[in-house]
Every structure is written in C-alpha cells, then in structure tokens.
Amino acid sequence: MAVAADAGAPAESGAPTDPVGAVPREYNFAADILARNLKAGRAGKTAFIDPRGSWTYGQLADRVAKFAAVLRSLGVQREERVLIALHDTIDWPSAFLGCLKAGVVAVPVNTLMTESDYRFMLADSRARVLVVSDALYPRFQKLIRESGDLEHVIVSGDDALGHKRFEDLIGSAMAEAQTAPTVRDDIAFWLYTSGSTGKPKGAVHVHADLKLTDDLYGGPFVGLTEKDVCYSVAKLFFAYGLGNALTFPMSAGACTVLLPDRPTPDGVTALLRKHPVTVFYAVPTFYAAFLASPAAPQRAELKLRCCVSAGEALPEDVGKRWRDRYGVDILDGIGSTEMLHIFLSNRAGDVRYGTTGKPVPGYDCKLVDDDGLPVKQGEMGELLVKGPTSAIMYWNNREQSRSTFLGEWTRSGDKYIEDADGYFVYCGRRDDMLKVSGLYVSPFEVEAALQTHPDVLEAAVVAWPDADSLIKPKAFVVLKVPERASDEVSRALQDHVKSKLAPYKYPRWIEFRQELPKTATGKIQRFKLRAEGSAR
Image 1 (spheres, rainbow, N blue to C red):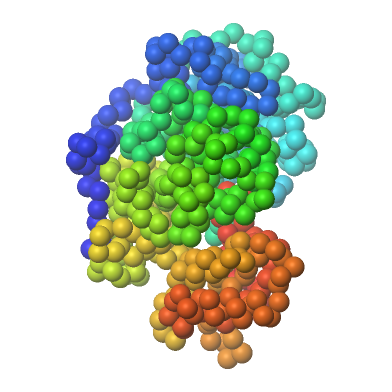
Image 2: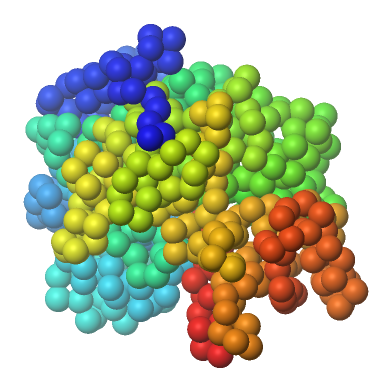
C-alpha cells in the first residue's frame, strides 16, 4: 500500500497537525486576506500590476468592498452565483474577492471556451450576474438574451456595450464595510474542470480551501515573502493559476504581474525583462516552448529564485535543461481542480526529475488497482488523494460526484508508480493507458523518451488500432523545425525510443503535426487524438 504524508505531519514540514482546525469557524477568505495585509502596514504596497498600472493592497481592498456593495445594490443574495469571464487584470481579483466578501458564489470560467460551453455554464450555474471582459462579450451576446436566470451584465473595459460598466459601478459605489457572516465551510466559488477528458464539471469549493492551499503548499513549498514578484502563465480562472497569482502572493504580501493576453514565449520574455519576477509558474508545454524559443532571455537577464510546474507531469529532460540554462530548479507537482492546488510535489533541495516528488504534508496519497485495492510498491495504480481542500461535490452531477469523491478520498484519474524511495512516478491518465501484447504501456513514458530527441518540441502518444484491430502506440509529434518532417526522421525517432525503453513500447506510427489539441491550461487533449483512431 503506497500511503504517505500523514495528516499529522512532522513539525518541520510547516503543515498544521489539524489543517482545518487552523481556520476559524467564522471565516471569510476575502475579508481575512485583505485585513492581514492592511494590518501589516501594506496598504501602500503594490499588490498587482496590469497593463493599466500598479494597484496597491489599499486600492484593492477598496475595490473589493465597492464591488460587494454593487452586488448588494443589484439585489444579489448570499449563495447566489456570479459568472466571471474576465481576462487577467485588476478587475479579476476585485470581482472574485468582492463576491466572497458579499457571501455570493463566484464562478470564474475559462476565457477560451466556445459559445456552447458558456451556454452550458450559464444554465448550469443559474448565474444572476455576468461579469465579462469587453473582448469576450461577443461570445455571450446571444446567450444573454436566451438566459432565463441572468438579470445583470457588467462589462470590464472601455465600452459598456449597452450594459453596466465595471469601472463606473466601482467609481460610484460606497465601500461596503459589512462582510457576509460566512463560515469556513460555506460555499465560496466553483471552478469548472478544464475539459481534458470531455465535458466540464463544476467543482464546488468552500472559503477555507483557499487559505489551506497556502498553509499546506504555498507557504512551505514556495516560501513567498512580501519582496517577491510573481507571474503565472496559468490564468486566474484555472485552479493552479488562482493559487499562483492570487492566494499565495496575497497571503505573503507579495506582488503579482497580470498579463491579459494569451501567454507566448515572446510575450512572457518581454514581461520577464520588464518586471523583476522572482517566482515563475508555468506548465510543462510552456517550459518546453520557452526553452525552444530563439527570443528566450539569458540567465543574467532574469531574477528568478523559484519555478513551479503543474498541469501535467514535467518531462525529465525539460527540467534538467531549464536548470542548466537558468540555474533554478523547477518544482514539479500535481494538483487538480477538485483538490484546488498541488498535493504531490518536488520541493526545493529535494528535486528528482522524472518524478512528481512526494505527498505534500497534510495530504495522504495511495495507489489502488482497478478494484480499489492497494497495489504493492513499484506497481502501477490509480492515485487517490485525501486532504482538507477537496471540493465537496460536482454541482448538479451526483453520478460523477459519487464516482470521484469516495468519502475522504478523491480519485485523481492519474496512474502512478511509487518507487523504492517514496517518489511518485507519473504514468499517464487512467483513460490514456494502453496495453500492448498484454503489457501496460505508459504514454507519458514514451512521450518523455521522444522529447529527449533534439528535434522534438512536443509529443502525445495514444492507443491506436493496427490492421488486425490490435492496440499499439501511436505518436503525434510537433518538431522544433516542422520542415524537417520526413520518413527518415520518423524512423530516427522510433529508433531513439527503442534505445531508451523496452522495444515493445516504441510508437508503431509517428504522425507529424503543427500543433497538438490542448485545453486553455496547456493540457494535451489525448482523447481527441484517440477519437481519430476510433473513427477509422
């Protein structure tokens, strides 16, 4: 049985012996996080930087109080929902924390979804208010007329587009002194799953979850101080980005740089040259793309002291190349929308590339077989996690809730092996695993081998039927120089994998692509690639 990180963690871990007990019964996260900074004398200290300028903790507290007042003036009641479809600017934390202060449930959503996705989310949440960036408004314009629950639309940007303008409402409101009398177990916000396996589900989180992610991971693992400047490639609507760019820096009184645009290596390079970012958060695909970019900065140009990766497992080669180039290890970890942030991770001074590290103190992890029974150490099993930040359910989805939330344990959907030293080695998603000649093959293992080849930028491996309908591995590969795609390179990649892994694991087919299907958070959507094989 692979179980680690007893909830009663040793004192040196920095984790409280009773994490939930460390959060007061009467608790409102927005009020707490802002009051802590104001009491510490940080009212004049920069909290966020966006394209409009710098915003202090005092200004943020005022905006949050005013947005809470706006919601009350619109008649929004406690526990009703507000859908937030905003790009990363100061308006995002203002709206999100304003909802929490008012006891209203914030529902931040992915800004790269389709009109169909938003139709589902509006109907599923029954949101009474929509807060939307003007650039995203066209995807909601038709839906606003269709929605039977939506009563108010607030537009962030220069033009109200016939509705209420966010900045006008903030400017005319009186700061709300009252904070809703919430408790730590009151519902605070939902996050829709990223959709890497299909239709999104609304994971429901409570006020205490935000503080606990910092108590257990942000503080002990990242070690932020008020001197740090943070930037997260993952956006605020993503569970990973919410911790990176809001919960963790605000808990320490640090500063966060917000970039509304979709991050690219060139754009992020410009940001890192302009701002003295010390803590950098990204996903594996972005680290790989950044390393491959001709415009990537030199080590001397950066101020980085800590880098973090999540979203998918970090290939060993990418981690080592990043450390060699920039002199900073990447702390690779795994979290989920359901658990809110990272619960299994490498940590500073104990980084073992090719693994996801060990359980974060305060969380328990175990590996089980298809029957739910513990596997032996060294055997592959599905990862289950137990910890205080688990979502309480999926909204309006009892079947999936009962399948995922198993009492105190939450199914991750990820396959892992625990090695002899207690490090967890990622093997792939439960639905991505394939059997070749009766033997399990981890697609991630094959992908990692492919990515050690100097020509490969990205790779995805899926199960594919051969002429006899027998399952074999197929690789979809993005080359650093797409023009090099050829049968000769394909054979070279197959030979490369054979030299790294057991021969039966090599990809029988290699298809070159310009890009791989991904979620907005950078996760490769292998189910879309598998579907192509199923349709043959």
